Every structure is written in C-alpha cells, then in structure tokens.
Image (cartoon, rainbow, N blue to C red; front, side, top):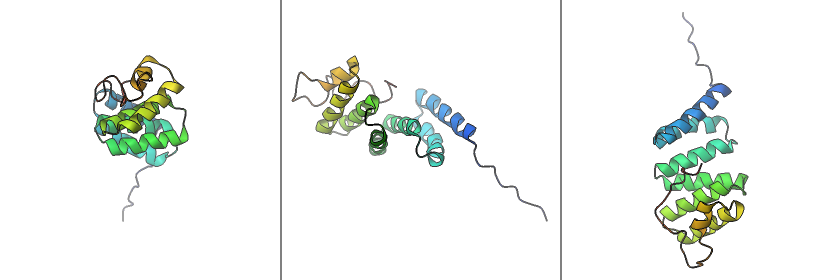
Length: 145
C-alpha cells in the first residue's frame, strides 16, 4: 500500500511571489490573471491591505466595477486617509455613472494629497461638476499607483 503525498501549503514566500507576479500581470494589462493570483494571497492574509488594493485595481482594469468598489471600500475602512484609494473609488463610481459619489471621493483624495491629478478631478472651482475635467475619460484607477 503506497502513501499519498499531500501538497505542501503555500509558504509566506509563495504569497510574496504571487503578489509581485500579480503586480507584473496588472502592468502587462492582464488584470484577470492578477486577480487569480491575488485571490490565494488574500485568502491566506485577509488583513493584507496592499493585496486588497492591488486586487481592487485589477478588478477596475477588468471593468469589474462592483468588485472593485467593494475592495476599495474595504481598503478605506482600514485606511481612511488613503488618498489613492479615494481617487480610485471615485473613478469606479464615475465609470458606474454615479457622479455625486465620485465627486465626494475625488474631493477627499485631493484634500488628503493635493497632487495635480486629484485636484483637477475634484474640480473645487465648480460645485456642480460631476467629478473631473474629463469625466468618463482619462487615467484608470491603476495609472497612479
């Protein structure tokens, strides 16, 4: 009778490798591949905000807006001062046709980090604006990270 070998559970090093590979896949415009790698990382380390932020960016890039929204919101629950997460969530709302919610998060991003892209999107000078000079166009949520 032969013994069956059980697969070894992934090590922390494997998760780091998967995270880095997911970054490369996202940069190479393969967001679905990135999500697949990050699923196992997040399953093993659900508290890892960086992995969740990367997965949110990958969902956004894959036009999976509801999962992107949920991940960005989870990141903001843990890190309410994360300007990029506010900006990316705003872009997600913008693409979903929710300009009022988008404007709120564009403004929070600009208040937290007044970099030019955030300030332009916030459009403080026009309170009736729906979220930016190129509403619906421009960078995606992954361009600024």
